[in-house]
Length: 177
Picture 1 (cartoon, rainbow, N blue to C red):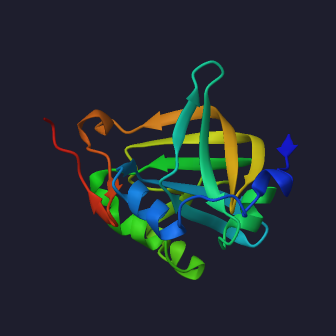
Picture 2 (cartoon, rainbow, N blue to C red):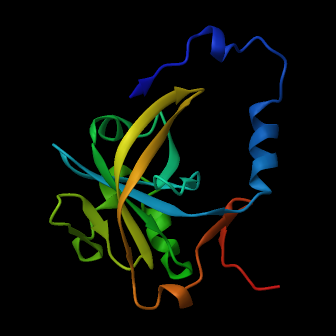
């Protein structure tokens, strides 16, 4: 189901916070780092996302956002299924690669493979899930994607691998308190 937000709902003349102030405030909140991949008629497509969240346990739903200016946006609008990779602390280079130029993301063919279902899968992620798109909601300058989890794969050492975090413009690893 596609949901469009009307111009009235996206009013920009209402007083609020400046984009830089907003970005700075949210930069103080750490986020887990994911890479979302999908197939397209032009080949594999993917992007780094820190907006990933669990949405529902029953049914199992997740969400993430994609900017409408993203080079992956057109493919994300067309894809029925995607793979969400929950990156480990050892995958900073992967996160960086997928946040840069689209032409570089799948250039190293040793770092990914194609699943039997057709989506590209980035190797080395401690946990990844295959999802089917349930809804896309255009809101602000992004599209909120809601997806149903079809399958989950966890590497044998997934419980021992710390997640990759993004905080204040840099990658981090968590430390137990």
